[in-house]
Amino acid sequence: MELGELLPKYDILSMRRVLVVQPHPDDAEVGAGDVIAKLHDSGAEIHYLTVTDGSLGVNSPDIPKESIVAIRKMETEASGRYLGVDGFTYLDEKDGALKDVPALAGRIAEVIRSYRPDLVLSPDPYLPYESHMDHIVTAKATSQAVISSSLMEYPRGTSTTPHSVTLMAYYLTAKPNVILDVSTTLVRRFKAMEFHKSQFSDELLALYRVYFTNRATQLAVNEDYTFGAGLKILPPLMMHCFTEADDYIPM
Image 1 (cartoon, one colour):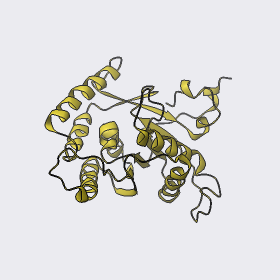
Image 2 (cartoon, helix red, strand yellow):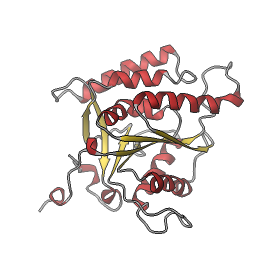
Image 3 (cartoon, one colour):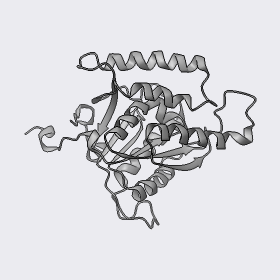
Image 4 (tube, one colour):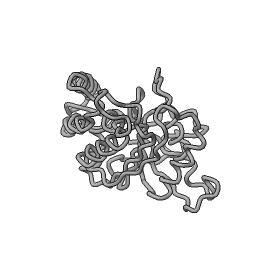
């Protein structure tokens, strides 16, 4: 019997509680705004977890440094609510300073055990040439939190109860194993990005529209729809000591 026959198949759109982890304000919209809108349309309750305070991200000298964190939270909630996000949690780690995966994993696990999602999304920590440590550390910490949240005493000293996540989904991935039809939600991804006025000039938004539209078209080239979004989806069982994770097909 093949391994794939032993593992259950999953439909990501059947997940009812979703936690979207983003390293910075705006990463969720840039990386998966169309997917988030699709999950909302499918009936999911969605919660954002933003890891850093976004204090390094500003595109204008006219924005006071002491205001940028508050501004970015307002932009996060405006864009998230536009996509259908129901709640927001902030860890307020310093932007550009993430380095401790185990410590951050414990903080993320507390949120997982409190919110109790079926599905957790984060950037792919194994994206080739990814050079932003906040993305790498956040994604690895989220992965560790997902596989560890079912343990009785994780993180150590916790007062929360164990929770088993059904699926992990990586966005901003070069190795998708699921392509979702986002023909009706791609435009909402771009609209959600527009709420982050402290980050994106009109010129950069235009560039993103071209790039992500082309990418979505390529992902749908063998499908019967116009635009696709790629995700790498794994059950927690396959996220530790499984050499076949690269070949897993979840649907």
